[in-house]
Image (cartoon, rainbow, N blue to C red; front, side, top):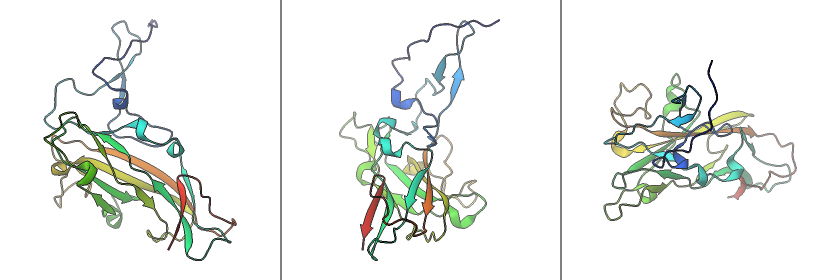
Length: 226
């Protein structure tokens, strides 16, 4: 019969941001918790390899995620009946932080809308981010955190004309690590051997009906006028 034991302090080598998991419906890649205990009790512990990898896996820094994004599903009311004709609301994903132990490598972010391995059209990269805050450096050995550009989820831009839930997916990895061969299992997302990507999904419920006077102007919903 197993017996309980007091929780153990995490190893100093693990940073809090390296403990990945489902975060109120927002799924972060590369996260697994396994039961480990010398005396047959359950103690959560990261399964990241202890030995250094030639291509360290990037991961999202949870502390960089604003609280208003912590929801199982984000709500987007496209437009209100009394909004100006040239104005509507979008979901703004602010710049997010990714940590990469090797400061010299260049990272790349690829954004997808409703990615489906069975639907070729959905596998197209909606936006690719390179350079800028994702570029590596040989001048600062402590520069392990990178910043993604903000992303506006705009129903008009994505030709979404009916109500429903859509998934905004961002995949971040070393630029040299993406396997863009025509035989890749997941087009535009598959990694070469030895490389690992970090993924983040934002489920967004889109309401395109004019059943409100104004679209909510409260983060992450913002109004844009053109």
